[in-house]
Length: 112
Length: 116
Image (tube, rainbow over all chains, first blue to last red; front, side, top):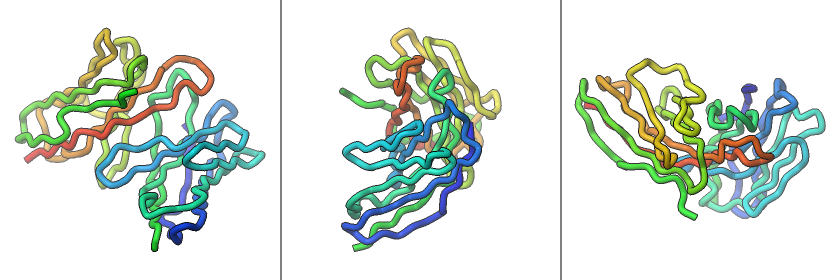
């Protein structure tokens, strides 16, 4: 699986958009970009994923650059409950979907 | 739909003992993977099972083992526990099949193991 690079920490004001960057310059053509978050002492929560098109769901939007070497997770209106560690990972869909390599992630702190 | 269920949530063991952790995947999911999370090493992949067969294995000693049953439920076992095995053990499940966007992995809440 390709390696990802994320800033170790970020702050965001409550109600503002949180933009979390991820660099994955060695991504392969068949690797997807996945985002998870982990709130202290809980299991990682799936947020969103994509291959090359931008994606949006009820939680967030994922913007992937045209060369696929980086992506940005956008939380449109951050709340205090969005404070968590956010992980960006890249991996193939099959057959090794279960084997994912997690980096250190970005600790997002949403402030009132 | 119920999520991934892990038991027990918390347990304390003594060095040298063994421990078995259990995981029930999301209904219909056939792939179960296990991860270890520690403050120093982060989230590390242990192994993945699909249809009762180990499909992938991480870089952990042989003291760490697992198995999957015909109903896709899985157990992992750690023998001869060491202090360094204290960690959050996470189970994740996915459909495990080669379908488009069908392999998102979903995590359980984890089992906190403390070795004293």
